[in-house]
Image (cartoon, rainbow, N blue to C red):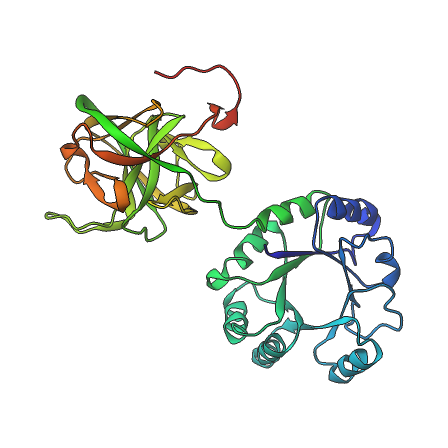
Length: 367
């Protein structure tokens, strides 16, 4: 889990409300410029003291971590001598090559490094994270808002160890915590036995082009019903008449369901550039990928029917063409037009009904 620090040094009249939200939402640390603002905090919250001018404060109170300006090497050493039982950190504002070098040094050698970047580019952060890749300390990056935090957490596929946000309103702490949620859990896939394959005429099907290279055993879930979906394979496998499209899934008919984040279903016809969809591999490992484009075209369609060991049934309608594939046992790619009764395909069987895509417990028949 990534660290979330909330900076209350300039929250003014919002301080009490923001502090209460942070405690309730299990924010990892609260940052204050005055030790008195840290005194009311429970032991479940890390107390960070960071003076606005970066100077070593005379009174550190109950602070767990004290951060001083990295350019004040003498004060940092004095802090370590005066308070050996307190964790120490350094703050660096990166504005040029010299301060970037200082940030790299601090991140590589210190227990805690708090970084603020003047310019909106993430390249300096990439450089610091690369320089400190094997260092045992933690890097906390100042962010403007929860959306910026989500970006910082993904830099170099590793991200900063934590972020520090100065909230503008009540609710920012909750949004920050949501941005720090760990990777998606694995999805329970089951083996389904094909019971039939039939031509069902013409209709519109959607190709989902993502902004990600998909793996050979990876695809997205597609089903005619919300409680049963097949894994439609990515176009990473060679074709005799056209190049591969490793970012694409020839998914299925436009009314089909697929899964997005938090168990939310979306119709394929709803997906737009910039939306997110859940990619899943043959082991059930998942990740959210960004949609770059959805191509909807009229094509002949094929209905695939399958059944689980417990009797639950699944139907998916895909393009009626040999190069459209579904994922089978062991991650093999199976051409949809050559499927036969008894073939094993992989799928997912959600247990709850859906209303506007959200899981809900109510009576609902789909047929």
